Length: 279
Image (tube, rainbow, N blue to C red; front, side):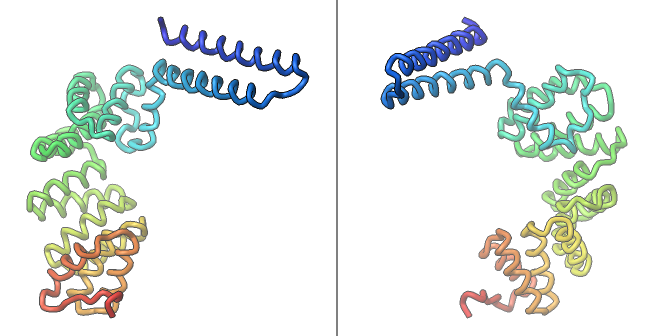
């Protein structure tokens, strides 16, 4: 039995229940509470079944939420090919839901359908993201470099993601290079500014780290990471008042207190940072 036929049957049953309820009310000349409650329970069950079956008929509707979530990656890729666009959204869904192996299989199939730079950018970026989450950062790095060097794509997300891979591998010089490109391409990418600040403070380029962290906060003041960097930077500078200020702001915004103290201690190893709560 098809899902559409099931819905038709359920609608007919709901109509019958409503008809019986109306007939009962007319016959008795009053609303019988027990009959009304029973009818409402039956109708609620029928409605729930209709909704569930409707979702099965057109599951692709749920995919369109990813249009907004990953709009910067998706862009106009496959806009003229509904089938491929849907497959790309399925890849986005797999990535979002950590269904990584399934997503990798889908993205590999989709790569052969790419004809434009925009399509290669979207498919390549999702493949690199999936590979990174699977622990294959070398594979992700090769894809990002192909998009940048061979296809000459200029995109702040790609630059920033590649910078993160270099940072994780300890190649801080290349990490800064790509974070800088990300910031030049899109000065409103708070994550790129924050990541640049983190690398710079690891290199003890304190003033540059402060500048990048402040830029990140101007864009997104709710992030806790830039405040952590500022707390460490001012610890290094010996400005205890600002260090304490940014320490507490980071905590309020969601930073881990123990981890932050450990991070700050790297920049003033001989001084214990006292929590205001203990004063």
